[in-house]
Image 1 (cartoon, rainbow, N blue to C red):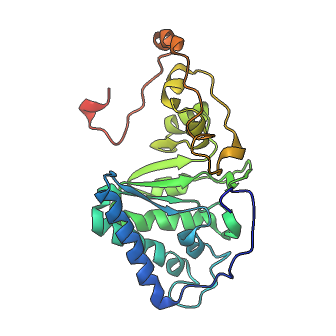
Image 2 (cartoon, rainbow, N blue to C red):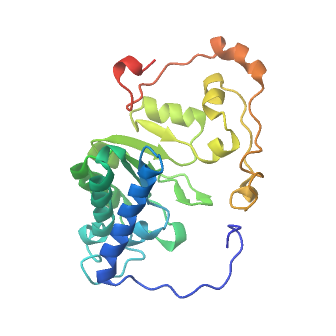
Image 3 (cartoon, one colour):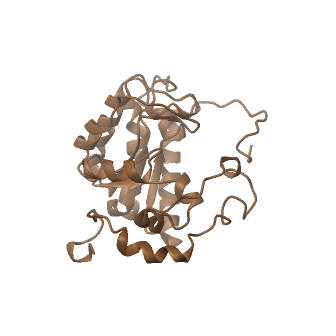
Length: 258
């Protein structure tokens, strides 16, 4: 339900008919066109967290017997058709995609998540999209984070564009993953929601507001959305003492890096 915590009775889901899939691909294409018309710089295709494209990729839920089920190539066909359509519509330089091969969100696991992640990385190279955004293997569901020896290293090596990672990162772990070459950029969600000035806080290594998970999906237009406080302006004096090494941003030209 809209609260994100309550459940109700839902209609029984069904598999898409084969002939319906091109219609959904076109829906994605039109949504991307509308986003650009509305003034956005680009779109990130949501291929993660148990949503439609993720369901097709994962053998734990995809039991189709047509050209969209069975083999890894077939299971990734629909998501890649969406990528191709959107890249052709708005330009690949305006397109990213989010993937969670190691996740099991909404009962959508995969028996070989590393192979899935690498296959998609290699396949995405064909379309020259701006970035691939992978969820860290430790994030299994929206409520479950586990320590694991699984890694995104093979997908990182396979993808030729800008590689983003996300998933329960702290300031320090973000610094470490960039410095180790594990990613080009690190994305933050919950910390950014609770800290509207997160870049400044990271720059100063300042304390962070704690997020209130119970407000993540409520319908109130203020509570949990715009009521988190900004850092006290007095912390500005610390800037000179807390300067850290700059990391090159792959989206900027060399003369813009400063």
